[in-house]
Image 1: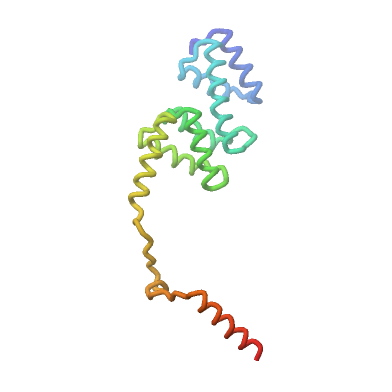
Image 2: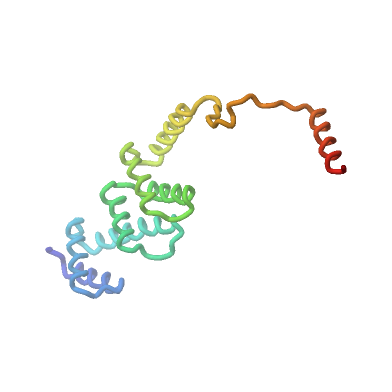
Amino acid sequence: LGFSADLILYLYDYCISRGKKSNAYIEKVGLSWAGDGISSVADAKAAITAYNENYTTVMKAFGLNRTPVPAELNYLQHWFDELGFSADLVAEACNRTMLSINKPDFKYTDRILLSWYDQQVKTLSDLQRYDKGHAAKSSAARSPQFSPSGSFNRFSQRKYSEDDYVSIEQRMLNKKQG
């Protein structure tokens, strides 16, 4: 991989500090770093910091105080690396997930982010424009006035006056007494 001795030592330190001592894991991290163009200890530290900040942001947005499990890591890598979303946008999608279904759900958040990706939402200002357009389409799609469709509402409704209510109440009281 062409790593310097310092970078190899840092690679080992990093992996062991995470409790991973297997050669296969260390090799996988090294290959990942090489694929990301990491060639110095400073590059590795910057990549680790960005990795931890992004993932921590998501886990906090979901109210989870733990490291992501492998299935969750797949979603996180997809959102940040493949789709290229910023931590702010992913956190907003997580917040909307929590507000909608009241629980952390990576699949639900993934659907939100994929819809934003399809609409080319890349920043929070893009999201604001998208939300305004979405709200306008939703209000235009709604019918202008309520039209009940059930058979219960297909007859003309009775209209009672205050005197009618007093009369009905009096008849019910008379019936109850005798």
